[in-house]
Image 1 (cartoon, rainbow, N blue to C red):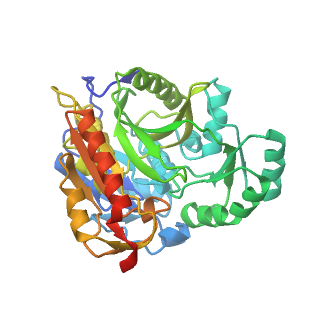
Image 2: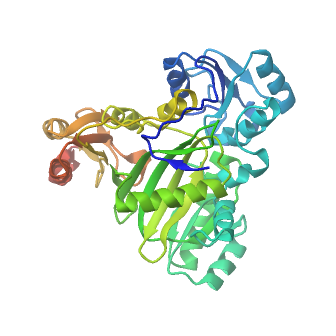
Length: 425
């Protein structure tokens, strides 16, 4: 298999121009997969998991959100039989909960997909790190365990300056905890295990060395007919000292750094057995070790901010890029003058109430082209500690990097100058 940039063309097609797709466990996608397929004339059926098979955080979720047709899964044989009777053309994991089942269903239906026997390579941080290391690729040194005692023994033996304690399941949405001592590891162990059980159904955690370099998020799509990997978007992240997301900048793939990340991602996808569909890789880059994969997950998921970025740069909506690649070939970015695109997370330094006048100033800055989840005037906000407590996101886009930088600095200055009025909280 070879890696294609987003402007590569593919002559082979694995799927018909119109068909039926099974979207496995589409929890939390708000019907975005179905909508993207519908734009290309495809129909979809949601394959829902029985409530008893869902982890606590997902129990009671309505699988019909955005889906007119829902099939509840009870066994691979029965589900495959029902899908075959409907004339299914493709099976796609629509969330982390659907990766393993989607692999097994594609095999049962003899459709293009990833090998069921290697699903853990695409869902488990520790398995990913071990597989990459075995093949000579840079990866964080890790231990997968449910035992605090085992984790403390490993940390003492490894003797790293800092560690990350996080869920083994790479699809778990909660951030890992950075620790610099055994006391800190002990303090975060129970809440991290609780979060892991709540979102993935298993309390297994991974403790790994903390890679301190800048982090990048790479969205990829692998064509089901050719196995060719396409980079649809490459984001460079900037975070605060506390680990809160500040901004993500769309990185040019033909830059020196972009090419280095692309080569590494190609090799990593091969090791992880990604032969079809979407994948999202989080990578840290250090001058000493180069790119290091922190985690990978084999499905696409977007937010309203991603959708707002799409008009500025084709491929930034991961679901749309995956659907288009599977049916019509890789997404091709618009030609002409380059657009500098950034996703900016608002950061409230304390709880307060949004100031109407300053909010209007932020949203009318020259490069602001999209607004996602922004609070209305006088809306109470809490101190930002993670993405869940972020007051909203802004999309900045311009033909000049300087213009984006100027407006980014203005946003932070307005936040510091009273966007969140403490006195009125």
